Image (cartoon, rainbow, N blue to C red; front, side):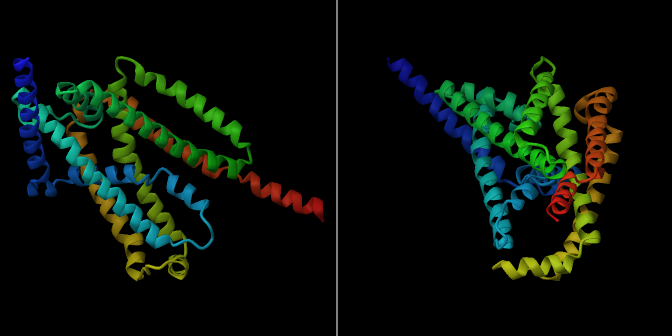
Length: 319
């Protein structure tokens, strides 16, 4: 009995020491990394993903808002709450990784897997080594499932809302078709090579696809919309006012910075393939799917609006 108690106490002590090492690694900045373009584009793609920028989700949700909504305050609150929660989650992640590094006698950098591997390989393995790991593992994957379902609802809603508004198709029909196609397409990620597929697709879509869409959105809004009218509307209904600096950020600063970082990262990736994968897999699974997605998006955007035709038809029938 005493032996079991000693093992339990030793395990908790090991967890405490490892967690402290993980938190130290998390809170110790490495200023040399700031000079690397990959770090910046990883940060941009991550914040794009967590804030749902480039997906059309925020545009969809904003279309459901009342006419007079405190736009600037809501935007700032959303950004700060999201970033604050990410910082808080970092404490949990690095404390667990620190424990795993201490238990295996390895540096933290050697136990951390990139991208998808962190959530599906490194973190579950670390949880399994902890006292009461089965309970924490069940809670972790339950939270992961809830996060995945809530994210899928947002993504499906963005696409569904756009199709319903443009082509006047019934919502139930669109949702059913999208869910079935999504289910069939995601079967590939459940195979033995599923993690490799998921890693490559995630890398190209979030690492490059969202950033490219962000650049196009800035160009579209900054150069084809009347920014002054849009800014005056935001200031009229919002408590936090924005100045002309906002015009400069949208038109010049954000697309220029994103383009420079994107080109630099593409250059580095051409020199060395991502993740040690073959060029064939990166081109077929990564690059080509991004190009097909963009082509499909442009094709759908170029189609005529059926809802406008229905309104005109209804007006003519009334007259």
